[in-house]
Image (cartoon, rainbow, N blue to C red; front, side, top):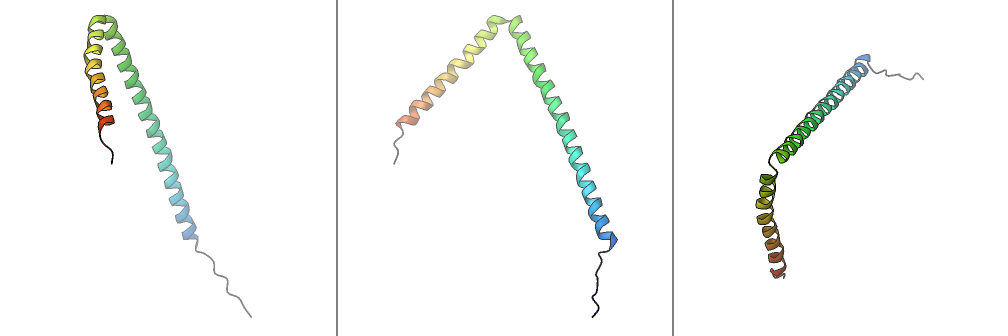
Length: 91
Protein backbone atom coordinates (compact mmCIF):
# COMPACT_ATOMS: atom_id res chain seq x y z
CA UNK A 1 0.00 0.00 0.00
CA UNK A 2 1.40 3.35 -1.00
CA UNK A 3 1.47 6.25 1.44
CA UNK A 4 1.12 9.81 0.31
CA UNK A 5 3.70 12.29 1.53
CA UNK A 6 2.46 15.85 1.76
CA UNK A 7 5.17 18.46 1.60
CA UNK A 8 4.68 22.02 2.69
CA UNK A 9 5.11 24.53 -0.07
CA UNK A 10 8.30 26.55 0.18
CA UNK A 11 6.35 29.80 0.11
CA UNK A 12 4.81 29.18 3.57
CA UNK A 13 8.16 28.90 5.32
CA UNK A 14 9.57 31.93 3.49
CA UNK A 15 6.50 33.97 4.49
CA UNK A 16 7.09 33.04 8.12
CA UNK A 17 10.76 33.99 7.85
CA UNK A 18 9.88 37.35 6.31
CA UNK A 19 7.37 38.06 9.08
CA UNK A 20 9.95 37.10 11.71
CA UNK A 21 12.54 39.37 10.10
CA UNK A 22 10.08 42.29 10.05
CA UNK A 23 9.17 41.71 13.71
CA UNK A 24 12.86 41.58 14.64
CA UNK A 25 13.57 44.84 12.78
CA UNK A 26 10.62 46.52 14.50
CA UNK A 27 11.82 45.36 17.92
CA UNK A 28 15.33 46.67 17.28
CA UNK A 29 13.91 50.00 16.07
CA UNK A 30 11.67 50.30 19.16
CA UNK A 31 14.64 49.60 21.44
CA UNK A 32 16.67 52.27 19.63
CA UNK A 33 13.83 54.79 19.99
CA UNK A 34 13.53 53.96 23.70
CA UNK A 35 17.26 54.59 24.19
CA UNK A 36 16.97 57.94 22.42
CA UNK A 37 13.98 59.00 24.53
CA UNK A 38 15.82 57.96 27.70
CA UNK A 39 18.81 60.09 26.73
CA UNK A 40 16.59 63.09 25.94
CA UNK A 41 14.78 62.74 29.28
CA UNK A 42 18.06 62.46 31.20
CA UNK A 43 19.39 65.59 29.50
CA UNK A 44 16.21 67.52 30.27
CA UNK A 45 16.29 66.53 33.95
CA UNK A 46 19.97 67.38 34.23
CA UNK A 47 19.38 70.79 32.65
CA UNK A 48 16.46 71.58 35.00
CA UNK A 49 18.46 70.54 38.07
CA UNK A 50 21.39 72.70 36.97
CA UNK A 51 19.08 75.69 36.35
CA UNK A 52 17.39 75.25 39.73
CA UNK A 53 20.74 75.07 41.53
CA UNK A 54 21.93 78.18 39.70
CA UNK A 55 18.74 80.07 40.57
CA UNK A 56 19.03 79.06 44.26
CA UNK A 57 22.65 80.25 44.39
CA UNK A 58 21.74 83.52 42.70
CA UNK A 59 18.65 84.26 44.86
CA UNK A 60 18.93 82.29 48.13
CA UNK A 61 16.47 84.36 50.18
CA UNK A 62 13.82 84.24 47.46
CA UNK A 63 14.28 80.47 47.28
CA UNK A 64 13.73 80.09 51.03
CA UNK A 65 10.70 82.39 50.89
CA UNK A 66 9.20 80.39 48.00
CA UNK A 67 9.79 77.09 49.81
CA UNK A 68 8.10 78.52 52.91
CA UNK A 69 5.21 79.98 50.90
CA UNK A 70 4.58 76.63 49.23
CA UNK A 71 5.36 74.38 52.21
CA UNK A 72 3.17 75.99 54.87
CA UNK A 73 -0.15 75.85 52.95
CA UNK A 74 0.67 72.41 51.60
CA UNK A 75 1.48 71.13 55.11
CA UNK A 76 -1.71 72.68 56.48
CA UNK A 77 -3.75 71.06 53.71
CA UNK A 78 -2.20 67.64 54.36
CA UNK A 79 -2.74 68.02 58.10
CA UNK A 80 -6.35 69.07 57.60
CA UNK A 81 -7.02 66.18 55.22
CA UNK A 82 -5.42 63.69 57.63
CA UNK A 83 -7.42 64.99 60.58
CA UNK A 84 -10.62 65.11 58.57
CA UNK A 85 -10.14 61.53 57.39
CA UNK A 86 -9.96 60.32 61.02
CA UNK A 87 -13.25 62.02 61.92
CA UNK A 88 -15.31 60.55 59.07
CA UNK A 89 -17.62 57.87 60.53
CA UNK A 90 -17.16 54.44 59.05
CA UNK A 91 -20.13 52.26 58.69
